[in-house]
Length: 172
Image 1 (cartoon, rainbow, N blue to C red):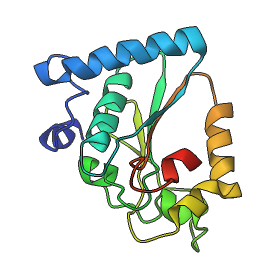
Image 2 (image 1 turned 135 degrees about the vertical axis):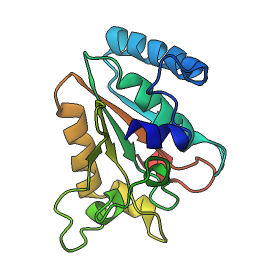
Image 3 (image 1 turned 60 degrees about the vertical axis):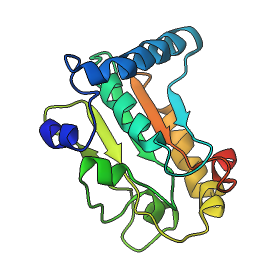
């Protein structure tokens, strides 16, 4: 729920909270780019791990989800160090990693919608994996293509791996 999300550092749901202002500014710029260029998939990267890219992804997606014209999805593609599930307090059975790895029972990645919010969260379970290979796989390309081809009212924030940790972000 939104109160739990706020207690975990996600302020983008509350436009009255002063801590959401920078995310509102980013939201405005992204919506401008969406209108001008049709961009609906945005990747968030950092140079190295543990510098706040997932914090930014969670808060920008929360701010975007307040716009009633769009449906916002935040997708955790950092298969080795995924942390969106921690921010939102989720324990996915089949995250994006399991889906891409075609684990038994993972016909689709788990997706969560916060009560009372217009945000869908697609977390991953982090772990040791051949992440670049999974992100280059046919299944990953199908997932990304599905996102691109989905309803034009859908916006996707993709929490990508750090660019200097491995080649995963470039692969996506």
